Image 1 (cartoon, helix red, strand yellow):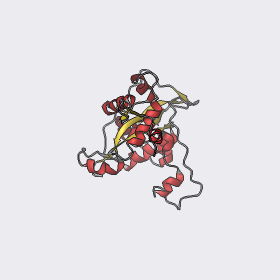
Image 2 (cartoon, rainbow, N blue to C red):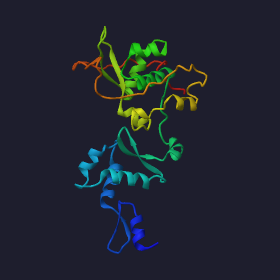
Image 3 (cartoon, rainbow, N blue to C red):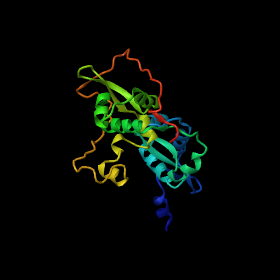
Image 4 (tube, rainbow, N blue to C red):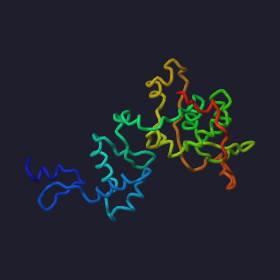
Length: 239
């Protein structure tokens, strides 16, 4: 391969120093430092504000993501933002160093799934879909975890509160957008839905648009959130 061809094969974030040796682009090094030091995922606007003017932020992120693809940590996009994460195939090796998380009960998982797919949704609507009543503590656990948020109030008798998911939910489950949740065919493929279920069963296309719907009013400014004590129905500590 000729020297010219070799240079053209270099990824854009790599440049040659005075001796002709490939070196890392200064903008790329700064981007790596920002991502490494960040305590939370960074959006492209925040990254752009800290890089030199004119830096190709999207190009740098794409190139860095490809560069880290086979390393012990990867650059991933979650909730529309970017963060460094342990490579999926190595996660089990580090799991023993983390405190054992309390597992959500089946009721909490079902409630979370209904909110994710049907948001905005009220408690009464959640109960109608589940077919059983929902303990207030179940919703409180999801709110305290930061995975569910209060959206507004439904324009219906009693003006019930509506619930939706948060960016923290997307980050925890490694989703770039709520639309990345599995559809009906994928759920059947993973065995989460029995293949023998009614052919009329549908899974709605989820949307976490932060804007209020036509049938929603904003929450009152003085609305206070309080959490009920957790019960055995809310958290399954034994797994």
